[in-house]
Amino acid sequence: MLKILVIEDDELIRETLVQLLESHSYRVIVAENGRFGVQMALSEIPDLILCDVQMPEIDGYDVLRTLRQNSLAATIPFIFLTAQSAKTDFRRGMELGADDYLTKPFTRVSKRLTITQPLTVALHQAEARLKDLANDSTKVCVLSPEKLALEALLRRALAQGEFQVYYQPQVNIATGQVIGAEALVRWQNPDRGIISPAEFIPLAEETGLIIQIGEWVLLSACAQAASWLAAGFSPFRISVNLSARQLSDPELKARIVQILETTGLEPANLELEMTESALVENATVAGATLNELKALGIRIAIDDFGTGYATLGYLKQFAFDSLKIDRIFVRNANEDAQNAAITTAVILLGHSLNMTVIAEGVETEAELAFLKQHQCDIMQGYLFSRPGPPAAAPARVIPFVPVSEPEKSKNLSMSSLGIV
Image (tube, rainbow, N blue to C red):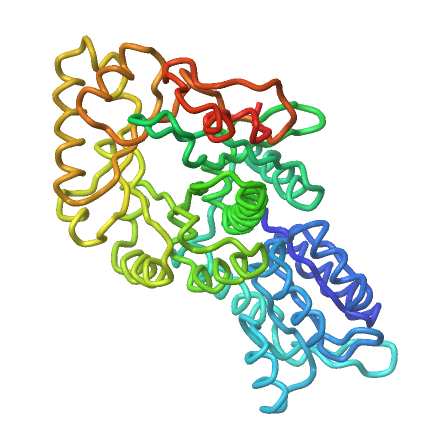
């Protein structure tokens, strides 16, 4: 059931809208003026906002302007439903970022409302626009009761700051130096505890919430990386995942530029990862976006290589900087002949295309020795460290690399970065 926020200061019109919307099986929440409307939008994260223009304190234009500047509400479909029908009013609303501008299907006469057109006309217009905004499909995504419940928790988590960023170090295999970390989102729900990304990330993609979550993760990770670099841990690069929905977001480049400016992180210290399946979903848009990001100096990596649907042509088309070997190929590569063949081939392929090759899921000394023998560049995995939050921890150095220069210990210890 779609949740619609109605922002309307006229009580009679507000109550009429609620009755009519609920009769069409919508879940309706209301705000009696613009100020409360902004608060309600940020706390409830509705699927659609219907907003009047003329209101006391904060008018509809300022409501829209405020919400479009907030990452939590920036992508919520927003439709003006107003008696203001002049072309100048329409133009102003659309220029501010409204998704549509509809005329109220009734007028107020004394203490009664006179219907000037069937409300279903306006509802159909609003619903059609919402469908267009939802994955450009012909029907609105229908979620099961279980998913609806989880979606409600997910929206609350965004509003109440329940997400955390964990970091898993990336280590130069030849030198043993920690040269970066991958940022991974975790959800600490007050009632259910840690909720697996495998459970909530697909739903976030499905509902579009991944854009807000992804932006928050990117901001947090860039700020943390800038802090580590300022503390003297260099070279250091933070790696952040991009989803298919984010790659299709026309505002992605602008969001990333703003985050880099806000945190002070240099583009060269940021690497953005995406899976093959995310690229295939919208290769044309993704290609243009990645070219723009690379032009800024940001590194681009293809994740889980060999497990998706992309062809080898994508490696040439997108000119990646890094190639990540999926853990299913790294596991027991020292013993499994097929995994050994695939891992070796991927390393050679990556190097022949001037890419840095990163092995994920390294868990044993034997796997590490195999990767080192075949000149893989970087590793990450439980052998060195599980993902963890930034926190104080006892000093610890990488056990499998001799430390010949004591002054390097600062770079060789991920715990000295404050990662558990």
